[in-house]
Structures are given as C-alpha cells and as structure tokens.
Length: 96
Image (cartoon, rainbow, N blue to C red; front, top):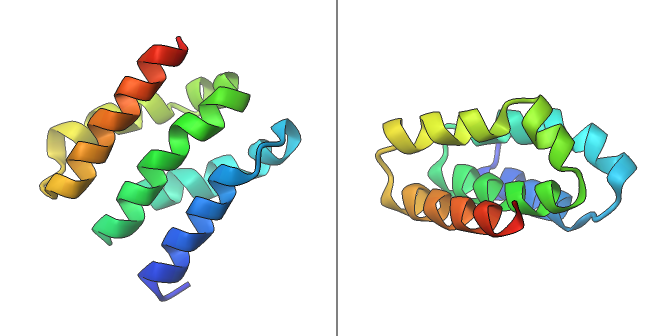
C-alpha cells in the first residue's frame, strides 16, 4: 500500500476486529505498521496494540510488541507518536 492514509485506516480497522482467531493474522501486519515511516500510520498502529492486547494478550507478549513499543518511545522524534505511546502504555498498565 502506498498511501499512508490507507495504511492507517487498515490498521485502525484491524483494531476493531474483536475476534481472537483473527488477531493471529493481524499481528504481523501490526508489527510492520509499528515500524512504518509515516508518523500517522505509526501512531494509529500504537493505538491498535491495546485493542489487540485486550483480546489476545499472549500474542502481544509472544511477538515482542511491548518491547517494540519500549524501543519506539526511546527513539521516536514525533510528538504525536510519543503521546500515543504514553497513552498506549497507560491502557496496557490498566489491563495488567
């Protein structure tokens, strides 16, 4: 997909699919979109993580998504992405 808007909408839609078996197929695209070059796509992917975690926490932990987020917060220069990372960690901490 070439358009950042389409990628962001795709990841947002993935987050709203609240079916455990479907999340298994969403984890790889989610990992890719967390590393997208576009900040809007990344911040949208970050917000998708708690939604997936709520249904399948084992997948998030098994695939090292929490560690990916921790690395992102240390290296990210875009304030929008950083603020969404903080919100994501807040949501995750409330679910644990």
